[in-house]
Amino acid sequence: MTHIRAYLTLLFTVTFVTSPLFTSPFSGFRADQLPIPQIDPPIQPAGYAFAIWGLIYGWLVVSAVYGLWKRPAARAWDRVRLPLLLSLALGTPWLAVANVSPIWATVLIFAMAVPAIVAVLVAPKADRYWLRAPVSIYAGWLTAAAFVSLGSTAAGYGVLMGALGWAYVGIIAALGVAVITQWRSRAPGYGLTVIWALFAIIMANGTAALGVSLLAGAGIAVMTILTITTTGRPIS
Image 1 (spheres, helix red, strand yellow):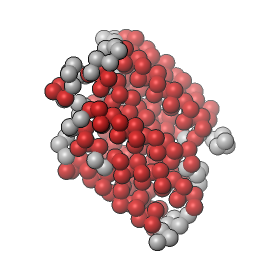
Image 2 (spheres, helix red, strand yellow):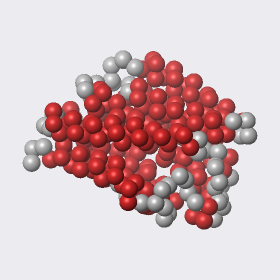
Image 3 (cartoon, helix red, strand yellow):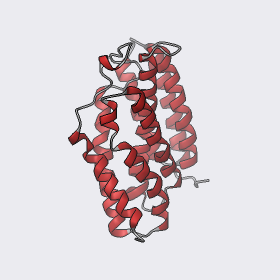
Image 4 (cartoon, one colour):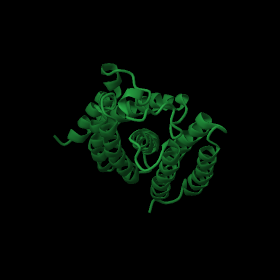
């Protein structure tokens, strides 16, 4: 029982990583899922960016196995395991939910992102490649993905503004969360993953939605400076 969090982390990592095998493929909300179809909304990164899930899945599995093998009762790891396994447990059904309901998928991905960010904030600098790095990348991508889902869904229901307006709101809001998290966590993997998502938004929009691309570019500049200046500094 003393190692229960280590076992549960491995269990929910496995259920999370294998969940795509039991659901239909998901590459964005289908046109028939939203009253106003969102075909390539400007807040959505280019398709290639989603390949980062391969890195996230693989690294989380390695981390969970290593933690159970080498750090089963480590208190520093346990502080990370509790929010992480909560995020992974919530994330296991996400693909199935996303194929049915954009609204509930958006609620669920924010529920996944919050504990993932908490896990980054409490992650120790020791064992950084075994624990802190994979959790940071996972949380960084969820930060971006949560606001992509929000922007796509809100635009799809015609809430207040259209897809372009929600792209601006989503990027600014995601940057707000990312800046605070990066400043507090000092985790380079988190910042680099947010930069990856922002660059993919530029690649998806180009000059067709120049304002969105410029905003994403400004976000990249901010996150690059912040990631460089915070890396290696003590965690406050």
